[in-house]
Image 1 (cartoon, rainbow, N blue to C red):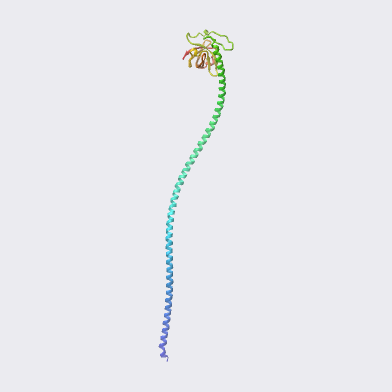
Image 2: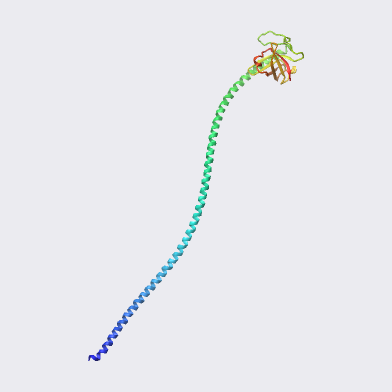
Length: 261
């Protein structure tokens, strides 16, 4: 009985085993397919990621290029700024030098100003002194002009060649005592001003006297020096002292003799 069933059982076992193998194989294939699909999905994802990375890489490369260009531009700007800075430093140094020179010139000007103000003060003091002297001279001039007018009025009544004394009452003497050179124009000293170095002579335009005429002066018959006419009036002249030391010897009433032109 078992002999007839043996092949059947074996066949069933083979079928069962085959089905098991087939099921297992199908299961493996399904797993492999699932894995393949999963891998394909992962590959697609990785491809997308790769594409994104490539895009990011391209953008990053472009940014890098832009950054390098910006860096170059910045370096150029820095170089230009450094050049400008050097020029500004040089200009600043030149300005500082000019400022120092201006300060030095200003100090010199201030010193000169102080010296000028000091000199101005001295000059003003000197001007004040000169003005006072000028007033004194003007007063003396007025006094001399008054005396000259009085002397001129007296001279109109005095004979030419006669010695005229001052108002102090001194006696009158004849000019012949001076022994004048024949034919030479003679006169006398009317006024002596030793402070301003001039004398007034009783000879003027009407006697033919001109500016720059020179007269020899005789005191007590002795020649003592020369005087030179500087200003001429109608009947008298003002003459400066020419010979050194004559002002210490000349006196009112001394004789004068025309010497040369």
